[in-house]
Length: 85
Image (cartoon, rainbow, N blue to C red; front, side, top):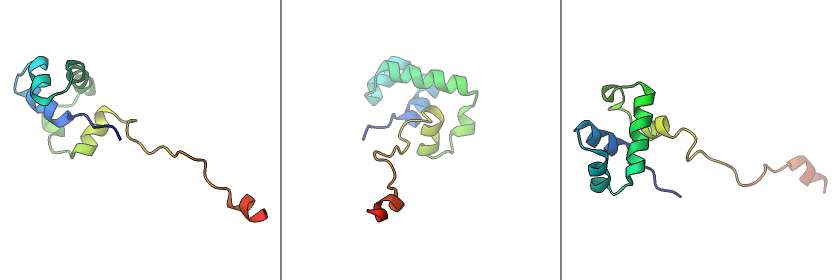
């Protein structure tokens, strides 16, 4: 499974007026990831006060809604067909 981006930590450090480069060094993520989270946050139109109380999964879902959703690997079993055999 892939690692989840540290969205909350990135937003907290950006809120403390750290640059994207400083945030990337502190958290060990790429500058592009920091810039992406920052751009998505600005596009969302929400303030930090609005989302600061959210849990990490809900916060992550705001930025990456389609990532880490369950995708079945196999088609569902057709039991009526199986019982006919």
